[in-house]
Image (cartoon, rainbow, N blue to C red):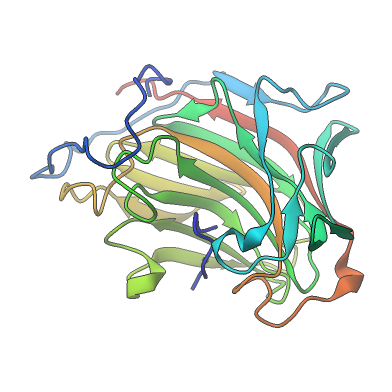
Length: 280
């Protein structure tokens, strides 16, 4: 789900100092790929939310709020908690047909916070996503500091995207300065299943200095290697944070219009778990 949300064709644990975010303090280009080795991950999550409480943990999650299209003509207003709740051990994000602050729909865009900034590791999210024309749920990651500049230079990792007009396809992608849809070089895959919206699935990211591997239900779907050519191809040596949201409409999500009978649209998240790398 693009930071500018235009159109998809889509650790050490936070021991780093915050970068300026202006793109003026960039690391020198790497001249060769990292040494190939087999990375392993801890067995116990270092950071997790099982959503077993009575309310959303404000130490782990915050909200992006507002309307304005989010860079690609989306139709929702993201509220500050009104469209998210904990129900029966699940985080529930609800997109509703509701007029609010000039927008025709409301939804939630949740952001991991506090210790929820990650550099390398394994992330697993078990979730059930909504269908319906005009819906655009996503599980994704954005750079915390924009150390290499604005999107797409500082990168984006899409663990899962889905659009309602394309009900059987799930999209897994990355975006960088060198690889993105605006210059027709995007990197990603389309995973086809007739249970995309009817069943829970486990979406997993394995992220190391050597590359990114993304899985659905334990099966490797997509690999993106660190070429060692610098931040334009590999900005993924800085900390990122989690994003969970349902957008409404937009240049991709609304490409075939919005069916108001799709709402309320609900994404249920059973858990989010982060595991550190054993052998960096």
